[in-house]
Image (cartoon, rainbow, N blue to C red):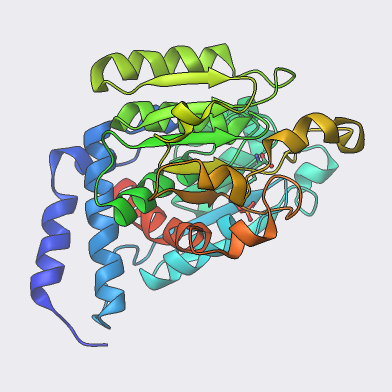
Length: 332
Ligand code: CP
Ligand code: NVA
């Protein structure tokens, strides 16, 4: 790894912009906790960090002497590993704890847990079942709290997905993303994130899983400013609509906070599978995204998941760079 002062100076300059200075010490609980300008500046920083690493240029020690607690109530592969690896690359320290093996498993409450974690660490990334529990953590922890997925929001995922879309297509405004499957937390976060940056957002979800009116309202208020077009369908849209779709996005039918009778729902959910037939009706440059984990044969076909239109691996990879940019801004 070689040193490149020009890159280091550019990174220091990006961190000093008004957009990123405003993130210092802040929580990141909701997708809309960063605005469009802050998102674009985070993408700029993430892009530079990724480029440095690819060119084997030594990364600046942006998280030197910083400790981040990774707190989990539910399983994770990507969120846990991408935070851990990214913090390591910036010379910080992170450690994992889960609810069951801490005193929370014996009844210690979130308030005292948040106060305790704040005695030793500089930030907490929390994955919890109920969003309001993360709000309790953020209320009582004097240190920043970052949402690593709740039943309502997955903002780190959506921020890095927008980065991946921009990296692939070269721009965001005017593209159309269609979420296909069971509308849930990832759908709601995508609605807000896409509307915020001017990506048109369609949702095709069975009527049994309607889009949350609360998130639709937030998305519409952003769309008024950015011109993003929002449409909701309860069956697969017609060919005329599909031909505008640049990104087809899906997620597991059954989220970790849900209890679905998938066998009984199969005839309904099966109509919302992302497969080659669906993609062939979309724009000629259409790509498929999935936050993962995927259950191949359910929400996505095996062929599409590993086919040439799939962006799932760069999508998973980019979680790390965007989160590194976010943490460097919050903890600077
Ligand atoms: N997409 C995502 O958050 O993956 P994990 O559940 O593996 O962290
Ligand atoms: N909607 C899924 C996302 C997993 C990353 C869940 O909440 O379980």
